[in-house]
Length: 67
Image (cartoon, rainbow, N blue to C red):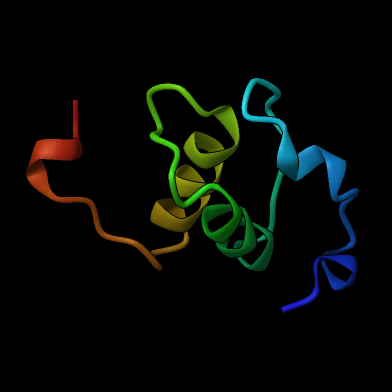
């Protein structure tokens, strides 16, 4: 997958401390791949991406992951 096809500035997906804002499911999937070693507790990009994927029904959280 090429990030240039996501219609989002690549820099917006690279910085863990910066919320990238609204994402499509495809953008969220790419963000999850980029931040594979991050946790949702510390990485705003991964947190947003996971929320998008859960909302779209593409990711189902384990009961332990739900606060």
